[in-house]
Amino acid sequence: MEPFTLYRRQPQGRRSNTRHIKMGPYLLLQTLGEGEFGKVKLGIHTETGQEFAIKLIRKETVGYSASRLNKVEREIHALRTLKHPYIVKLFNVIETEKYIAIILEYASGGELFEYILAHRCLKEKDARRLFAQLISSVQYMHRRKIVHRDLKLENLLLDRNRNIVVTDFGFANNKQDDLMATSCGSPCYAAPELVVNEGQYAGSAVDIWSCGVILYAMLCGYLPFDDDPCNPDGNNINQLYRYILSTPPSFPKHVSKDAQDLLRQILVADPQKRYTLDDIQHHPWLKPHS
Ligand code: ATP
Image (tube, rainbow, N blue to C red):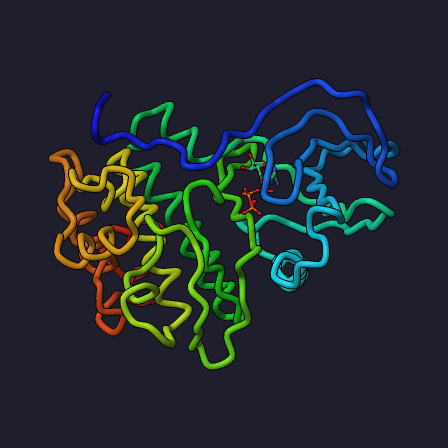
């Protein structure tokens, strides 16, 4: 097996044929994927014929767990607050006896993860366009005082024009003074200060770190801090963070000097010295999209 390729850490979404049932005015079709609380189905509005992604949350899965309920509420709250071309649109929330159904924009271009895998890595021109869209959406959320806290390839989908659709706001939080205490997100995308410093961290800086990991994966086809031979899956989190702190990112030859420079300014362990979103937008590599 090649050491440096992206591989999925979570079960892959399944597509299957099911009998068609209705949820409010929507006809439920095939399963697009599966999340922590249930399936995401393709749905069609029976009157307009418009397609939607319908996230079905089984109430019994959420149960009486405050943290799970909190996650669902956070997601709905964030999506109600955010309206941006590159953030998944919330159209409706339907509650039945058994389900909470979140009616979302259908991202028909699939997952960015699969798109990168299919191309091995992206051309800089394509990566630049997608990264500019991601940064624009993150800047918008931060201005609306929301930090995502779980930005990763698996949470970036594509629409039919191959534009970014940021999803999964289950860890999103309102930043009042930007200081947060709960550690969350996926280890390979999480900023070192989330694990290394116990206590508070600046929410916006952790999203910026994750954007850096995403850009690296788009350009290289593998994750920047996943190649520790002693910890190949990044499963030992303390070891992973020691590795991140002691290993400056290295790049394959095809990555341009400008792109390398931008990534070296984003993947900085000290959040105070890490590039801000404004810095990123003014970097020469993003100039064509500034
Ligand atoms: P969680 O951490 O909440 O379990 P998740 O990313 O595992 O999040 P979902 O957000 O429920 O789960 O999504 C599961 C899968 O369903 C996604 O990986 C994707 O393949 C598909 N999916 C989700 N939202 C959409 C959408 N708006 N359009 C198309 N497919 C979607």
